Image (cartoon, rainbow, N blue to C red; front, side, top):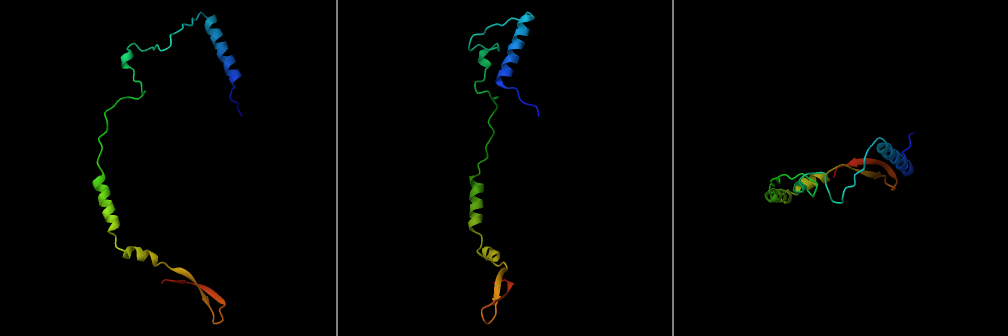
Length: 106
């Protein structure tokens, strides 16, 4: 299993890369806080998102109202059909001893 480098190893590697860069003639230039590499500061988008036109919205109040009316207008017979499922019932003999289970539709 390959282990991730810890903070000390990462810091040592970065220091070595900086030393190599400076040893090969590289120069570190300090930049003032708040400066940007972009030429026109007015073109910056502070939110970080691309501006685009808003999508048009479709009102759904009429659709929701029609769904609600259909839901409340359902006949009660549909609910009673679901209740007519077979269920298990125990049969007992004359002395009250259980005999067997049977499926009954009531």
